[in-house]
Length: 220
Image 1 (cartoon, rainbow, N blue to C red):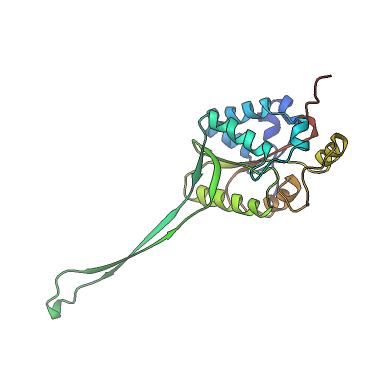
Image 2 (cartoon, rainbow, N blue to C red; image 1 turned 180 degrees about the vertical axis):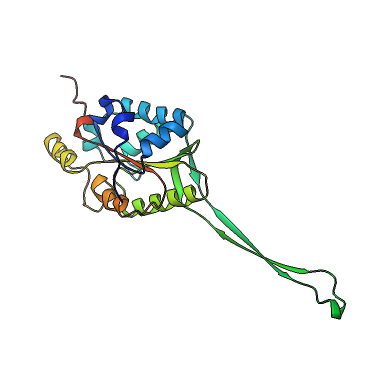
């Protein structure tokens, strides 16, 4: 699947200069048109976000410092965690046999429920996950959830906030600590093959990756 570049005309250059962005199916244009308020929220969070020394030097725990900070920024704007569950009901209608004196159909009903994956942030018709340094299998989960939500008509598109690797790893070495550990964690480089092979189906996907250009050095 070909990547598109509507984000270049939708986002201000102040953001495209600091972040690496990728998309399929003109995702930025779709989301800005169908969910303008939510799109403005995304731009606002990106504009106010920066990386500090502590993000590299201090262990972040299970969730991670950066992911927690980004999620909290969206919570303050009214975004909430969501989960897409499915329930399929099947009806088998056994028709009456008049010669045997039967007059009414007999209905056999069965139901299958499937508990879906959680999405970090949902508002309007936008789903957004923060994948800073989690296991890269989370990307498969996210794209699968977006695909199901889109096919069900629940969202207009999905957004993944993540990071680049080489430049941030080099920056971490300068600061004093590589915070990323193994190479099998979520990042832009891991996400791109999943986008181009069409893992999200017909769902427009916007990927925004923080870079070393988001770093704010401490004041002297």
